[in-house]
Image (cartoon, rainbow, N blue to C red; front, side, top):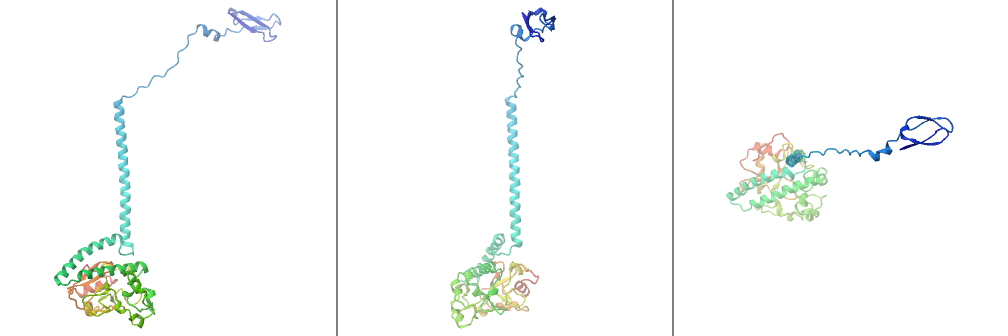
Length: 339
Protein backbone atom coordinates (compact mmCIF):
# COMPACT_ATOMS: atom_id res chain seq x y z
CA UNK A 1 0.00 0.00 0.00
CA UNK A 2 1.31 3.48 -0.91
CA UNK A 3 1.23 6.69 1.04
CA UNK A 4 0.34 9.90 -0.79
CA UNK A 5 1.61 13.17 0.57
CA UNK A 6 2.62 16.68 -0.57
CA UNK A 7 5.49 19.04 0.04
CA UNK A 8 4.12 21.81 2.17
CA UNK A 9 6.59 24.34 0.68
CA UNK A 10 6.28 23.86 -3.08
CA UNK A 11 3.24 21.60 -3.30
CA UNK A 12 4.85 18.75 -5.19
CA UNK A 13 3.01 15.46 -4.86
CA UNK A 14 4.71 12.17 -3.90
CA UNK A 15 3.75 8.53 -3.47
CA UNK A 16 5.88 6.09 -1.48
CA UNK A 17 5.45 2.66 -0.06
CA UNK A 18 4.01 2.35 3.44
CA UNK A 19 7.26 1.04 4.87
CA UNK A 20 8.69 4.59 4.69
CA UNK A 21 5.92 6.05 6.89
CA UNK A 22 7.25 8.45 9.47
CA UNK A 23 10.62 9.06 7.76
CA UNK A 24 12.00 12.39 6.57
CA UNK A 25 12.98 12.98 2.92
CA UNK A 26 14.19 15.96 0.88
CA UNK A 27 11.87 17.47 -1.73
CA UNK A 28 13.41 16.92 -5.15
CA UNK A 29 12.07 20.20 -6.43
CA UNK A 30 12.77 22.71 -3.67
CA UNK A 31 15.06 20.66 -1.36
CA UNK A 32 12.78 21.34 1.59
CA UNK A 33 12.61 18.58 4.24
CA UNK A 34 9.36 16.65 4.13
CA UNK A 35 8.09 14.15 6.73
CA UNK A 36 6.25 11.16 5.30
CA UNK A 37 2.97 10.91 7.17
CA UNK A 38 2.00 7.82 9.13
CA UNK A 39 -0.38 5.40 7.52
CA UNK A 40 -3.96 6.27 8.39
CA UNK A 41 -5.26 3.27 10.25
CA UNK A 42 -8.89 4.25 9.56
CA UNK A 43 -8.34 3.24 5.92
CA UNK A 44 -7.49 -0.27 7.04
CA UNK A 45 -10.26 -0.71 9.64
CA UNK A 46 -12.80 -1.83 7.13
CA UNK A 47 -10.47 -4.59 5.90
CA UNK A 48 -9.18 -6.21 9.07
CA UNK A 49 -10.95 -4.80 12.24
CA UNK A 50 -13.99 -6.67 13.56
CA UNK A 51 -16.88 -4.49 14.59
CA UNK A 52 -16.95 -3.87 18.33
CA UNK A 53 -20.19 -5.16 19.86
CA UNK A 54 -22.57 -2.49 21.12
CA UNK A 55 -23.01 -2.14 24.86
CA UNK A 56 -26.32 -3.36 26.11
CA UNK A 57 -27.49 -2.48 29.63
CA UNK A 58 -28.41 -5.53 31.59
CA UNK A 59 -32.17 -6.01 31.82
CA UNK A 60 -33.72 -5.12 35.17
CA UNK A 61 -35.08 -7.93 37.12
CA UNK A 62 -38.76 -7.37 37.55
CA UNK A 63 -40.45 -8.13 40.79
CA UNK A 64 -42.63 -11.12 40.76
CA UNK A 65 -46.43 -10.65 40.53
CA UNK A 66 -47.02 -11.74 44.15
CA UNK A 67 -44.94 -8.75 45.30
CA UNK A 68 -47.05 -6.37 43.20
CA UNK A 69 -50.20 -7.83 44.66
CA UNK A 70 -48.94 -7.10 48.16
CA UNK A 71 -48.18 -3.47 47.36
CA UNK A 72 -51.53 -2.56 45.74
CA UNK A 73 -53.82 -3.55 48.64
CA UNK A 74 -51.55 -1.57 50.95
CA UNK A 75 -51.97 1.50 48.77
CA UNK A 76 -55.78 1.07 48.65
CA UNK A 77 -55.94 0.64 52.40
CA UNK A 78 -54.03 3.87 52.93
CA UNK A 79 -56.34 5.71 50.54
CA UNK A 80 -59.43 4.43 52.35
CA UNK A 81 -57.98 5.48 55.69
CA UNK A 82 -57.24 8.94 54.38
CA UNK A 83 -60.79 9.21 53.00
CA UNK A 84 -62.26 8.18 56.34
CA UNK A 85 -60.13 10.74 58.12
CA UNK A 86 -61.31 13.46 55.75
CA UNK A 87 -64.94 12.47 56.29
CA UNK A 88 -64.44 12.48 60.04
CA UNK A 89 -62.89 15.97 59.96
CA UNK A 90 -65.64 17.32 57.68
CA UNK A 91 -68.36 15.77 59.83
CA UNK A 92 -66.84 17.23 62.96
CA UNK A 93 -66.71 20.69 61.39
CA UNK A 94 -70.36 20.52 60.33
CA UNK A 95 -71.44 19.35 63.78
CA UNK A 96 -69.49 22.18 65.40
CA UNK A 97 -71.15 24.76 63.15
CA UNK A 98 -74.64 23.37 63.83
CA UNK A 99 -74.14 23.24 67.58
CA UNK A 100 -72.58 26.69 67.70
CA UNK A 101 -75.34 28.17 65.52
CA UNK A 102 -78.04 26.54 67.63
CA UNK A 103 -76.58 27.89 70.85
CA UNK A 104 -76.12 31.32 69.32
CA UNK A 105 -79.77 31.39 68.22
CA UNK A 106 -81.00 30.06 71.54
CA UNK A 107 -79.24 32.63 73.72
CA UNK A 108 -78.94 35.71 71.51
CA UNK A 109 -81.84 35.81 69.06
CA UNK A 110 -84.58 38.26 69.86
CA UNK A 111 -86.93 36.75 67.31
CA UNK A 112 -89.45 34.49 69.05
CA UNK A 113 -91.32 31.42 67.95
CA UNK A 114 -88.69 29.86 65.71
CA UNK A 115 -85.78 27.44 65.41
CA UNK A 116 -84.44 25.47 68.33
CA UNK A 117 -86.14 27.65 70.93
CA UNK A 118 -89.57 27.06 69.39
CA UNK A 119 -89.05 23.31 69.10
CA UNK A 120 -88.36 23.13 72.84
CA UNK A 121 -91.42 25.16 73.79
CA UNK A 122 -93.58 23.17 71.36
CA UNK A 123 -92.67 19.96 73.15
CA UNK A 124 -93.53 21.56 76.48
CA UNK A 125 -96.87 22.68 75.03
CA UNK A 126 -97.74 19.11 74.10
CA UNK A 127 -97.33 17.99 77.70
CA UNK A 128 -99.10 21.00 79.19
CA UNK A 129 -101.97 20.89 76.72
CA UNK A 130 -102.59 17.21 77.42
CA UNK A 131 -102.90 18.10 81.09
CA UNK A 132 -105.25 20.97 80.21
CA UNK A 133 -107.45 18.63 78.19
CA UNK A 134 -107.65 16.21 81.11
CA UNK A 135 -108.57 19.05 83.44
CA UNK A 136 -111.28 20.18 81.05
CA UNK A 137 -112.74 16.69 80.99
CA UNK A 138 -112.90 16.60 84.78
CA UNK A 139 -114.56 20.02 85.01
CA UNK A 140 -117.23 19.09 82.48
CA UNK A 141 -116.56 22.05 80.18
CA UNK A 142 -116.58 21.32 76.47
CA UNK A 143 -114.91 24.60 75.43
CA UNK A 144 -111.43 24.08 76.93
CA UNK A 145 -109.98 22.65 73.72
CA UNK A 146 -111.11 25.63 71.63
CA UNK A 147 -109.88 28.05 74.32
CA UNK A 148 -106.42 26.46 74.14
CA UNK A 149 -106.37 26.89 70.35
CA UNK A 150 -107.43 30.51 70.69
CA UNK A 151 -104.73 31.27 73.23
CA UNK A 152 -102.11 29.62 71.02
CA UNK A 153 -103.11 31.83 68.08
CA UNK A 154 -103.07 34.94 70.26
CA UNK A 155 -99.59 34.04 71.56
CA UNK A 156 -98.36 33.53 67.99
CA UNK A 157 -99.88 36.86 66.94
CA UNK A 158 -98.02 38.59 69.80
CA UNK A 159 -94.77 37.21 68.42
CA UNK A 160 -95.55 38.14 64.82
CA UNK A 161 -96.35 41.64 66.00
CA UNK A 162 -92.99 41.78 67.77
CA UNK A 163 -91.24 40.56 64.63
CA UNK A 164 -92.77 43.47 62.69
CA UNK A 165 -92.42 46.31 65.22
CA UNK A 166 -89.53 45.02 67.42
CA UNK A 167 -91.81 45.37 70.45
CA UNK A 168 -95.12 44.06 71.73
CA UNK A 169 -98.28 46.21 71.36
CA UNK A 170 -99.05 48.99 71.81
CA UNK A 171 -96.27 50.47 69.68
CA UNK A 172 -95.40 54.16 69.28
CA UNK A 173 -97.68 54.75 66.29
CA UNK A 174 -100.71 53.69 68.36
CA UNK A 175 -100.22 56.24 71.14
CA UNK A 176 -101.59 59.77 71.44
CA UNK A 177 -99.93 61.94 74.08
CA UNK A 178 -98.23 58.79 75.35
CA UNK A 179 -101.49 56.92 75.95
CA UNK A 180 -103.23 54.25 73.85
CA UNK A 181 -106.63 55.13 72.37
CA UNK A 182 -107.44 51.51 71.50
CA UNK A 183 -106.53 48.27 73.21
CA UNK A 184 -103.73 45.98 72.16
CA UNK A 185 -106.44 43.54 71.07
CA UNK A 186 -107.39 45.94 68.27
CA UNK A 187 -103.81 46.42 67.12
CA UNK A 188 -103.33 42.66 66.99
CA UNK A 189 -106.11 42.23 64.39
CA UNK A 190 -103.82 42.22 61.28
CA UNK A 191 -101.87 39.33 62.83
CA UNK A 192 -105.07 37.37 63.52
CA UNK A 193 -106.35 37.44 59.94
CA UNK A 194 -108.56 40.52 60.60
CA UNK A 195 -106.76 43.18 58.58
CA UNK A 196 -109.95 44.44 56.94
CA UNK A 197 -111.63 44.99 60.32
CA UNK A 198 -108.53 46.80 61.61
CA UNK A 199 -108.59 49.21 58.67
CA UNK A 200 -112.11 50.25 59.61
CA UNK A 201 -110.95 51.67 62.95
CA UNK A 202 -109.95 55.30 63.32
CA UNK A 203 -106.64 55.03 65.15
CA UNK A 204 -106.68 58.73 66.05
CA UNK A 205 -109.91 58.42 68.01
CA UNK A 206 -110.55 56.71 71.36
CA UNK A 207 -112.26 53.36 71.61
CA UNK A 208 -115.63 54.89 72.60
CA UNK A 209 -115.81 57.51 69.86
CA UNK A 210 -118.97 57.29 67.72
CA UNK A 211 -117.02 55.78 64.85
CA UNK A 212 -115.10 53.18 66.88
CA UNK A 213 -118.05 52.36 69.18
CA UNK A 214 -119.93 51.05 66.16
CA UNK A 215 -117.31 48.32 65.81
CA UNK A 216 -117.59 47.05 69.39
CA UNK A 217 -120.07 44.32 68.50
CA UNK A 218 -117.83 43.04 65.68
CA UNK A 219 -115.42 41.41 68.10
CA UNK A 220 -113.67 38.42 66.42
CA UNK A 221 -114.48 34.94 67.74
CA UNK A 222 -110.91 34.53 68.97
CA UNK A 223 -111.61 37.00 71.81
CA UNK A 224 -114.93 35.39 72.78
CA UNK A 225 -115.53 33.11 75.73
CA UNK A 226 -118.52 30.86 76.44
CA UNK A 227 -118.56 32.10 80.02
CA UNK A 228 -119.11 35.71 78.89
CA UNK A 229 -122.61 36.45 77.61
CA UNK A 230 -122.27 40.20 77.05
CA UNK A 231 -121.59 41.06 73.36
CA UNK A 232 -118.29 42.78 72.65
CA UNK A 233 -116.77 41.83 76.03
CA UNK A 234 -113.71 39.61 76.49
CA UNK A 235 -111.85 38.11 79.46
CA UNK A 236 -108.57 37.91 77.52
CA UNK A 237 -106.29 40.50 79.07
CA UNK A 238 -102.77 41.28 80.16
CA UNK A 239 -101.67 42.40 83.61
CA UNK A 240 -101.03 46.13 83.64
CA UNK A 241 -99.39 48.57 85.98
CA UNK A 242 -96.03 49.21 87.57
CA UNK A 243 -93.71 46.20 87.50
CA UNK A 244 -95.54 44.50 84.60
CA UNK A 245 -94.49 44.43 80.94
CA UNK A 246 -97.49 46.64 80.08
CA UNK A 247 -97.31 49.92 81.96
CA UNK A 248 -99.70 51.81 79.66
CA UNK A 249 -97.07 53.37 77.39
CA UNK A 250 -94.86 51.87 74.74
CA UNK A 251 -95.04 48.12 74.31
CA UNK A 252 -92.17 46.08 75.82
CA UNK A 253 -89.36 44.51 73.83
CA UNK A 254 -88.31 40.89 74.14
CA UNK A 255 -84.98 41.91 75.62
CA UNK A 256 -86.82 43.56 78.53
CA UNK A 257 -87.88 40.13 79.82
CA UNK A 258 -84.72 39.59 81.84
CA UNK A 259 -86.40 36.98 84.06
CA UNK A 260 -86.77 34.74 81.01
CA UNK A 261 -89.65 34.68 78.52
CA UNK A 262 -90.74 31.25 79.73
CA UNK A 263 -91.21 32.62 83.26
CA UNK A 264 -93.39 35.68 82.53
CA UNK A 265 -97.13 35.84 81.74
CA UNK A 266 -97.98 37.73 78.56
CA UNK A 267 -101.80 37.51 78.68
CA UNK A 268 -104.40 35.47 80.53
CA UNK A 269 -107.94 34.16 80.07
CA UNK A 270 -109.47 35.58 83.25
CA UNK A 271 -112.83 34.91 84.82
CA UNK A 272 -116.06 36.10 83.20
CA UNK A 273 -116.57 38.66 85.99
CA UNK A 274 -113.39 40.47 84.83
CA UNK A 275 -114.44 40.84 81.16
CA UNK A 276 -114.06 44.28 79.51
CA UNK A 277 -114.97 45.80 76.12
CA UNK A 278 -112.45 44.31 73.75
CA UNK A 279 -111.55 47.67 72.16
CA UNK A 280 -111.05 49.49 75.47
CA UNK A 281 -107.38 49.89 76.52
CA UNK A 282 -108.02 48.34 79.94
CA UNK A 283 -106.49 45.19 81.44
CA UNK A 284 -106.11 43.46 84.79
CA UNK A 285 -104.63 45.81 87.39
CA UNK A 286 -101.60 44.32 89.10
CA UNK A 287 -102.11 44.09 92.86
CA UNK A 288 -98.77 43.11 94.35
CA UNK A 289 -100.30 42.28 97.72
CA UNK A 290 -102.92 39.93 96.27
CA UNK A 291 -102.38 39.36 92.52
CA UNK A 292 -104.66 36.27 92.50
CA UNK A 293 -107.73 38.45 93.14
CA UNK A 294 -107.32 40.07 89.70
CA UNK A 295 -108.06 36.77 87.95
CA UNK A 296 -111.70 36.62 89.03
CA UNK A 297 -113.86 33.48 89.08
CA UNK A 298 -113.87 30.62 86.59
CA UNK A 299 -115.66 27.29 86.26
CA UNK A 300 -112.78 25.74 84.32
CA UNK A 301 -110.73 24.88 87.37
CA UNK A 302 -107.72 26.81 86.03
CA UNK A 303 -106.89 30.02 84.19
CA UNK A 304 -105.22 29.65 80.80
CA UNK A 305 -102.33 32.00 80.08
CA UNK A 306 -99.79 32.68 77.35
CA UNK A 307 -96.20 32.99 78.49
CA UNK A 308 -93.87 35.46 76.79
CA UNK A 309 -92.19 32.62 74.89
CA UNK A 310 -95.54 31.70 73.29
CA UNK A 311 -96.17 28.56 75.35
CA UNK A 312 -99.53 27.85 77.03
CA UNK A 313 -99.79 27.31 80.80
CA UNK A 314 -102.57 26.92 83.35
CA UNK A 315 -102.74 28.92 86.55
CA UNK A 316 -104.44 26.96 89.34
CA UNK A 317 -106.73 28.98 91.60
CA UNK A 318 -104.65 27.70 94.53
CA UNK A 319 -101.44 29.30 93.23
CA UNK A 320 -99.53 31.22 95.89
CA UNK A 321 -99.63 35.02 95.60
CA UNK A 322 -95.82 35.13 95.66
CA UNK A 323 -95.48 32.73 92.73
CA UNK A 324 -98.06 34.59 90.66
CA UNK A 325 -96.39 37.89 91.52
CA UNK A 326 -93.07 36.64 90.20
CA UNK A 327 -94.74 35.34 87.04
CA UNK A 328 -96.39 38.70 86.32
CA UNK A 329 -93.24 40.79 86.75
CA UNK A 330 -90.77 40.46 83.89
CA UNK A 331 -87.58 41.96 85.27
CA UNK A 332 -87.70 41.74 89.09
CA UNK A 333 -84.87 39.18 89.19
CA UNK A 334 -87.15 36.36 90.41
CA UNK A 335 -87.61 33.53 87.91
CA UNK A 336 -90.23 30.98 88.94
CA UNK A 337 -90.57 27.34 87.82
CA UNK A 338 -93.33 26.31 85.45
CA UNK A 339 -96.71 26.09 87.25
